[in-house]
Length: 243
Ligand SMILES: Nc1ncnc2c1ncn2[C@@H]1O[C@H](COP(=O)(O)OP(=O)(O)OP(=O)(O)O)[C@@H](O)[C@H]1O
Image 1 (tube, rainbow, N blue to C red):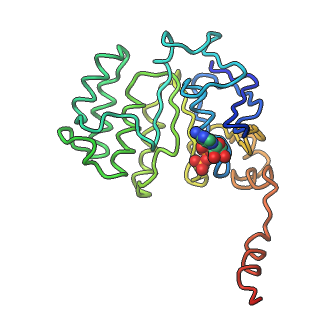
Image 2: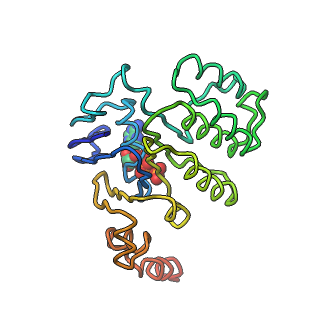
């Protein structure tokens, strides 16, 4: 169980995370949603210890240190690999450093995305680099896989097919925390939706509960965010005002 307890993060006085508390059990696929600048990346970077913060984050009751950090992996479009190395060299590096490395999964996903194994990653396209990030995060052998906008630059077929593959390969002990703006696409793949707004966790529900209440994920987000349906009309009226 990954637990965040009253986690706050300030950037030069700006509160990017405000007393965020969240429990992530094993075996869930959780969507993390929120507007631009809401704090999704910050929350993930606090979990990983890339940023300092106040509050507590624990994994199975223990603080996250070098002893247990390998249980968490991260796929980020900011990229975390060695650009000069090939995919094969990354595989060798991961095998050396992560005893839990999932070779079969790595090879299978490389084939699925049709990525070259002997080309420096720096020569991959943006979409291919993001695919490779996801492959590494899923192959590390982590229990908690954090994905931050993993498919920027990927076409719809790659995205949708990937989610189907993901559902098929995840083991009951693995948890995915997936941050994305593509709500409609992931709605059928996630089991739970967490909403963050201006650094605060403002919503947390299961897709099952949403279905029972006859709501879609978009309805839930709009309701929780108090979405102003007239903002487009307002903007157009301001922008087209001749004065
Ligand atoms: N290193 C930093 N220094 C100062 N402010 C930062 C830093 N990183 C993030 N912020 C600010 O913290 C807030 C949260 O940023 P964050 O990147 O977590 O948002 P996000 O929800 O991931 O947004 P997006 O969906 O646009 O990627 C934003 O206002 C951002 O400007």
